[in-house]
Length: 363
Image (cartoon, rainbow, N blue to C red):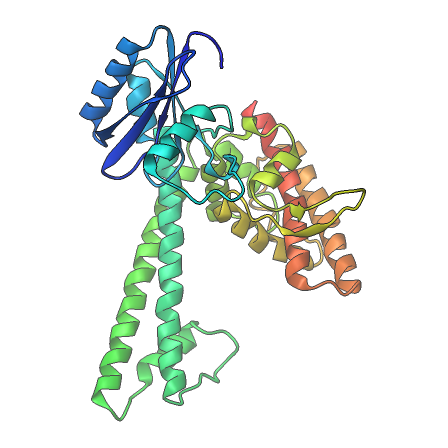
């Protein structure tokens, strides 16, 4: 530990924050607990600054409390970083976990690993995209309730392949059950679907408006040049990652998204397993969904309008990705690989193309 620097670990919770302060040249930390309120945090920071002989650095673990604590501390002129929980070392066999131990460990392992918090504006847009994702999940649940009710009562839609089309909805409205209670349940389920669909439309309209303004317009326009990526997907990727400068290479971004295989190699033997699935699950899911589009033959018919006014460099990258990833998808299919594994492999390679498209814009 560098002389003259005091490290402070904070174990954040909804109501309280255990504090562990490691003064220079001291092994045993000074520990106490404060309430998770701005005024209490301010008093805690001033107390540490009075007792510390030199520079002070605060840190806490990323979690559900977000980045408000970091902003409060930085507003007071102090240094505060957020530690990535997935990269904090854990001792094998360790079976004791308390808030005080967590705060002490954070102070001791200050340099373990850092994350790059978004700005307040970036965080707000990210939550907007996540609200839209939550509304979509609610819609899927509501639709499942209807289909399962009809299945239990012996009603099966045979008017076409697509469910929830206009014809399917008219058919649902025309159904009449013998039991009055069943009719009430169906009407309630259909009303819930209409309400969630309206929520979803409003959220998507807000996202569409945000995507047309800086600092998102340029990156969203570039991502929409790629097959399988339109405005909602592009905005979610940009909002979730929010800074491409922290990824020095495509492999770093792939690892962050959990799209690289796990590995246990020893004694000259290399063993690779399933995907690590570490990091941002929102972006990983979207990229895997986009990867399924590359099973189709390359075509720019539906991309022409989205590519108008975009840089030639980005369009060339998107075309190269479309041709390369389609070939890889078909080649792996011919080898008998399971389609879900192929989609994950294609998503990993698509991540590299996205990095190449957006990295120069972040410089």
